[in-house]
Image 1 (cartoon, one colour):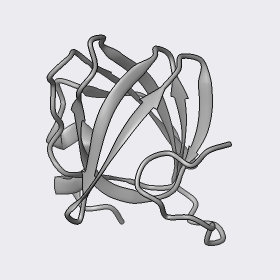
Image 2 (image 1 turned 180 degrees about the horizontal axis):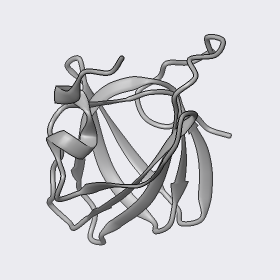
Image 3 (image 1 turned 60 degrees about the vertical axis):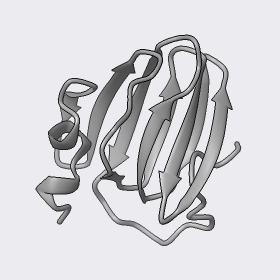
Image 4 (image 1 turned 30 degrees about the vertical axis):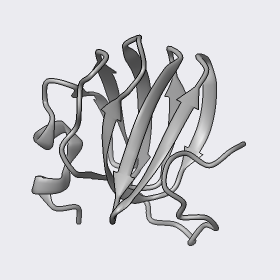
Amino acid sequence: MELQSHDPAVTDPQLYRVVFENARVRVLEYRDQPGDRTNPHRHPDSVMVTLSAFRRRVSSGGREVDVDLPANEVRWLPAQEHSGHNTGGTGTHTLFVELKDPGAPTAGGALGPDTP
């Protein structure tokens, strides 16, 4: 079970909010503004839906990756722990559909979203 201290809705409640949850999935809405940062948190395997275009720096384990995503993309996000920083000039609006059923391991585990 995920530690509460790593739950993004707990670490950054001003940026993440739970919009739906059942036994199989949890859906988080994320909104931020330029310059906003998140505390370290963990996502299980998830599907990310970008509702706005955004630029951010994702950091984990001493590594940093700059991510520039367009609006209206749907991407697989392998389980990971990270923090983020909105480095762009616009706000971010995304949905994360977090899977609760661990299922089979997936390839990747890369920092940031996998490409489709």
